[in-house]
Amino acid sequence: MFGAAIAYGLSRAGVDTLMLDGHDNNLRAARGNFGLVWVQSKGKGLQRYADWSRESARLWSGFAAELTDITGVSIAHRNDGGMMLLLGDEEVEKRKIEIAEMSKQSGATGYDCEIITHADIQAYFPDIKLGKAVTGASFCPHDGDVNPLKLLRAMHSGFVNSGGRYKSRCTVNNIDHANGVFTANTQQGQFSAPKIILAAGHGISHLAESVGIDAPIRPQRGQVLITERIQQALPIPLNGVRQTDEGGFQFGSSEEDIGFDDGTSLDVVQNIASRAVQSFPQLSTVRLVRNWGCVRVLTPDKCAIYEESISHPGAYVATSHSGVTLAAINARLVSKWIATGEQPTDFNHFSASRFHVQAT
Amino acid sequence: MFRRHDKSSQANGDNVTIYFEDAPIICKPTDSVAAAVLLSDPGYTRRTPVTKAPRAPYCMMGTCFECLMDINGVENQQACMVPVRDGMKVRRQNGVPVLPEDSKEPEND
Image 1 (cartoon, chains in turn red, cyan):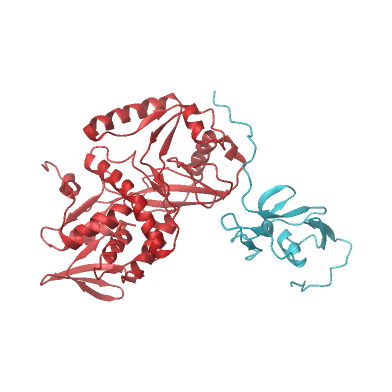
Image 2 (cartoon, rainbow over the protein chains, first blue to last red):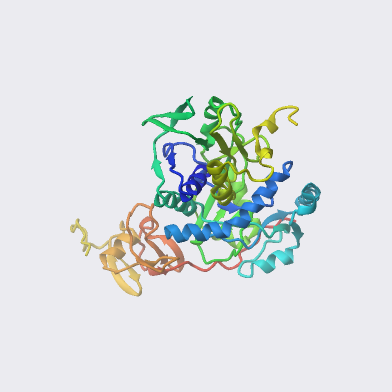
């Protein structure tokens, strides 16, 4: 998702761009994610990342309209706020503490997230009954969602429409650098360019190392469930439950540290389904039609890395979880940074040097 | 449009009758609802949720979800996965079903 968004932005700006993509059977966070454009959970410990996520959410409406304009693909973007449902008093108290911490961290910017009551929540959803187990929610007006598969398709289509070149089944084995030119050695031969952007998800670490950038990525599995299509009842998304533009209810938000395994497991599926039915009891008789696992691309602090190599100028790393949320800002500001050198404010906060001890 | 390849057992005593949009279809007990309905030349068997386009069974093996129909009052059923039973009432699936009525809420107290 990172690579496609940046490549789309570059190609739109008239930069001659070649996108080298992996195989269908690679781990692909971009094809299995939940589709949230989400701000309220982002940037704990790194305020620049919280601001960055909110800035991307703000850019999203214009970005979505442009994609549809160029490609004809409607990507079902919504930006009317989003909620994290809280089940039980303990979850409410825990969330209150997190909100207080984030409010303090964000200072004058403000965190823009508040706890609302059962009755407040129910008022957002007149067409479906809220479960008694729901004791509150945290509501953030900047949150929203999108159809992530249509988004990916639209970015690829917009990239090619704007003159970009795309190669699939073209895993990059290693990179050479000589005389200011980078050469990617791939399964389909060599490709050279004065600049190279590494946005290779789980395949990034060894490539980044070869151009002098540390990109420590770890895998975390999330599982997702989807139901049959039903009449629309969720006008805004929740972090573990949303309804797609086509009517399917999607459930998720599990976190498992079990390596590069994108399978599924019954216990996790049961927990996710149980929470969904406690949130909205009417869903208990709705049929599940599919579930899948997908492996998140996480940095140590779950915030993005954007960095140009000092030892190999012209080589860039751009990677993170949250490829959907950040698609708009990656297509706009990150591609501009790479094309023109113009850095967004305080961009050095995203350097991977923050993971090193005593980085100041 | 569709014809049965195996005619040997068509008229034996094991036949069952189902009703598609109230019209009777005589079929074999081993037929799926989708197969039986296709034999009656139904035109279309559902309308899609988003564009309301007419559709009919396609893959006949549980994958494509094109065969969704209302079977005995239960909507969104994959008709290719459901064996016929005598007297079944089958209707076209028109877009998305409404949410089920409030069912029993699990007790959390």
